[in-house]
Image (cartoon, rainbow, N blue to C red):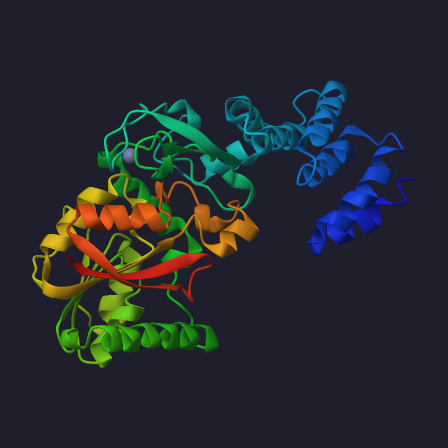
Length: 381
Ligand SMILES: [Zn+2]
């Protein structure tokens, strides 16, 4: 029975979705059970969202609330731009798939299901415009480990005024540091220091190439004061200090901050931004994959610009919506995680936010550390 199922799954597993669809279309001719219909709908939806919608509805008629079918239907609707219809279906899929129990088991600071926190929709943190348009909805719990602090169903909106993309209703600013800290302290990646071996050495080499690139692009910063916000285990700082910088780091995850201090003897302060931001001025401020964690990035950029010495350099890396990688790979990977990432820049909106902080982009390159991120150097305009 369903002789095409094995090749359909094999093709899906190797990312050959067009082949997989061909096999699944044969499978659905054989009146499969609702689980298989839902599975087929998820793959077929990549090419034919309306067809996938019909299949998922058939599966739900046969088995109401089947999580895979709710998910497939939600994806099919989202691919048609029908975000308000998709959102409750994604939530239903999370709640009934056992992921909700997992979220609660993660020992979250909150007892209630995450999406019962209905935070107020906020005006654009960059330009203040109230109007926005939904541009993406997805079930983040399918691709990452979520902690029950915010809605694992991510809904993004694009500002009608300035085009900045953001999480529709982010948690309030005063709750963010505690949540991030709890999430980082439970995440194996941010709780455990890198193990000695080629992985650690590879990280150090990438950091070194960033430091050397910085010295080449901003030779006046050589040997100056350098601040890293969100410095994690301090690997970049250790490399920067080796090449002569006077370094200080700020890190929210206590385990990582402690390791950086005890391992490298670095000045790493455990705290959050902006509350614990060290006093400037600095010749270099770096923030790798941090600016997207702030619900008001413009306010943070303004503070960083203030702490930059005249002629100093701000180095940021951040996921970039119009990066060719994401145009090909989509947005359902951990780079677009919740709850971590609250705003999403593209080339234009990052330039605009930098400009409002009095900064001018002077160099841009794809990150060699994070898929689909860019590294942008800027200095006072
Ligand atoms: Zn705006």
